[in-house]
Amino acid sequence: MRTRTLLLLATMSTLVTIVGAGVAVGGATVDAVSVSGPDHEPSSVTRAAQVLRVWDHARAVAWARGDAASLRDLYTPGSRTGAHDVTELRRWRGRGLWVEGLRQQVAELRVVLREPRRLVVLVTDRTVDAIAVAAQRRTALPTSAWRTHRVRLLRRHGRWVVDRVVAQPAR
Image 1 (tube, rainbow, N blue to C red):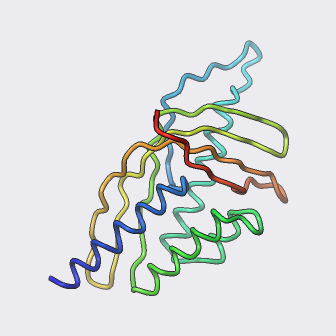
Image 2 (cartoon, rainbow, N blue to C red):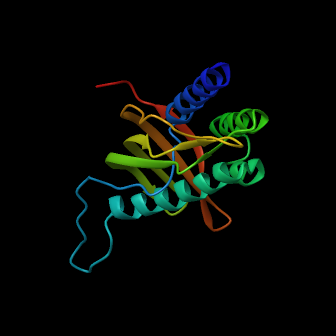
């Protein structure tokens, strides 16, 4: 009973941190309307959603492997959001736990700024399908509440990295 309680507390603590940081991952789906222009170029929302999907997938892989170095590389140097994410991953791994199946379900995505080397989005999402894994146990994590975050990504060395995530007040 004690092990199960500790696992649940650790799981909830990290899940709240992950969602609070706005850096939950994997297979995002966007329910926002995105329209391509007459030249069939993808819209800003479609391009931003793809950037987030790729980034989220890489983050999910790092968490599933317990790979702090790969996780750190998904953020700009000095990013407080990145430092917090890496610290949480190390805390989980220190307890013999890791997280598989992290996936973000996106309800709304708005592009605030789109430049060649900078992207700022407002995203309303929640974490779904995550599983806490220990040596002999797999525990499904609860689906998180819907939250809105302002996410700033920068293009560095040919790939997008997260610079900053700020939780937005509830509407």
